[in-house]
Length: 251
Image (cartoon, rainbow, N blue to C red; front, side):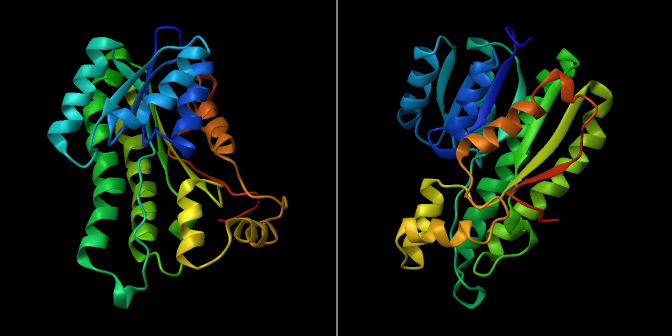
């Protein structure tokens, strides 16, 4: 299906991004593994290559327009024109509103929203030329509102609006755009949250699982599996949607 297709996954050095890159490689895509530090992508690339897949590590600050264009140009030259884009890169700078700095607001907006915009703008050219493409944006259940995350919640809600607009603009070119809103996923990011609130991570996950209908927290592979569906030919009539992968209904 996807032997000649190229996928880009941002924030793919670890966590959800790494699991997604590996899954797309299993699906037959050549995968560009993007993260802020190219060296940090080595483990993901090695895992893909040891499984017989093809991968390329690329260092890029997704909030920097020049770096984004250079990265996409390099990927197109070395792997081929990218037609799947997973906008996963993200950061958290949690704080209550009265303690949140402008820098914490701007950092989160720049990585999540500006980054997804810049990457989508740079990659859409290749999708339009191929008359086929898939954009998957990583939102979050925090888009519905979450205490201490005014910046993150706003960015994740904004990604849903971007997704729906991209679906409308690019649909006629054979390009779909969808968003995944994960619930609690066990990653370095949620470990950092546990540390911030002063809880042991195991206790933190147990507390979270007790509030989830399927009685467990999510794993990065749960999100990767959903990305795999959106990246497939068979999902071509699904566009502009937000799917909550959270172990139960969220919206």
